[in-house]
Image (cartoon, rainbow, N blue to C red; front, side):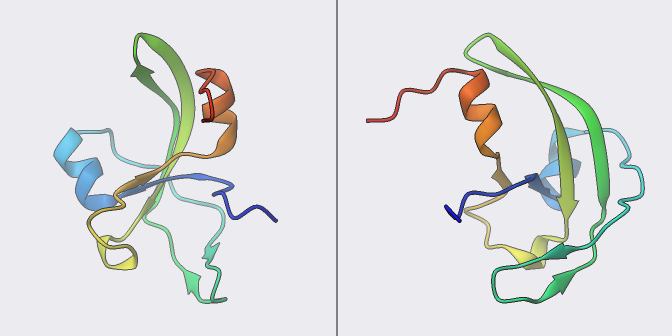
Amino acid sequence: MDGSPKINIITKQLKLRLGLPKPKLAPYNLIMVDQTTIKLVGLIKDMKIYVHDILCIITLTIIQNSVVDSSNSMLLRKPWLRNVKVAHG
């Protein structure tokens, strides 16, 4: 396993700050690397984001703020990187 996230994660605090729509119920829980299980706040499907004018449509998984530190308020998985053609250095 390469350690990259398999889902797109955003904190509840950042979701509120960005004014994103109300999430739908998540049909699963998140199991962290240390095997702790986290109940999710919800999902926002088909969210449109733009990175340097490149449109990406993703599903955001909303988690409680206490799960991550404030420097990691959003994590995007690898398919997003391929869609925007990120060059690895």
